[in-house]
Image (cartoon, rainbow, N blue to C red; front, side):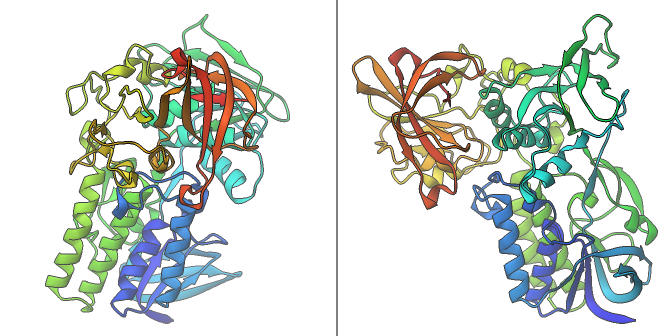
Length: 522
């Protein structure tokens, strides 16, 4: 029987964060993970995180994973990979399958950070090769460099479905449609908007009826659903695809908590262990953190992990009560800021018709994935000027403020409330550096120069596709819906280490297209 102060089950964002906080106090920490590589979902996430600096905002997920691993190594955290935890008992004994053997470990405290598993939906043909989860698609693309398919249909418009759809486009796949049985887009509007302007159509209030094919997927049929989510006859639409990607939610992997005798309740995403603000369950010395205690974003999981690590250190006498309370309070403040805005837990499932500022929410965005042309002017970040200036098409109250810190001239104001819509300061002078464009996690900021030359303007936009266009290239400008609106010429391409792979593409368009052109196609 091998003994340790703390055993952490799961080397994802929550588990690594918990191990780091505990190790900082001098605890002997052992981490188990069933995978061949640590980091959990972080290394699949190539997009930039939301939030503020304390939440790792504008940093890509795989970079955050590297930072956590490096810090854990420096602190002497031992991480055992290819280790499947088979049992967890009330006396905090852990049985682990490693290399064909079952080994026994025991700890004074155990933190369960096992994360969540992907949900599936059933339809005719759902077991055919080519029907995969969004997480599997991310693994193929972002860890192994493999295209999941050539033509893909995505089911689900939550943040996972939207983010993975964009990453499929980045990987060179054609996303033929985004489908959701719900009547409204479930994820952030900025995620939906960057997919829509690439020309991907949204089919809300639709579901998959069947997948075609004998040995693999060759097509898919969708249909509109009624108020009871039943397919409506005569509304079928067919797409030729080789891949159907499912992003229909996650379920907490809470089996070990139940095995250990923890009290279980119905929580966010399914059955979860009941826990207090410190992550402590009903069983002394067993704590939980991350998606296993309720489905949220990776940023929240990291904070919950830190809280659990601090709490475990206090439980075993490595921290005083005052030190624990101080550490936890700071983390709770950071966590609470992430749980504000239009996507706060209290607003889940609600149709909000106004922003916090009293601005009418774009129904077009919720139903089609993009803000309509006659709606965009209502938002405070959309301004007009004779000189170059930022146009911020951030239309929902989400916790994010990197643009405010990125601007060297303080042109952009959000204020203390992290969920406030950004505002352009009319007194400040934009120098066109593009730092705000590159820093925006939602790719929702553009630089517009209406005085570029007579009858022409330039639009500088974020661009994360390969091959990267070159100055002088000609192509087509697309509007927010992905519709071609005019010819365009590339007049500038800027890439800098500070932009972290978000290239700035500047195109010249007719003056009357300055507020419509939002994407470039060679």
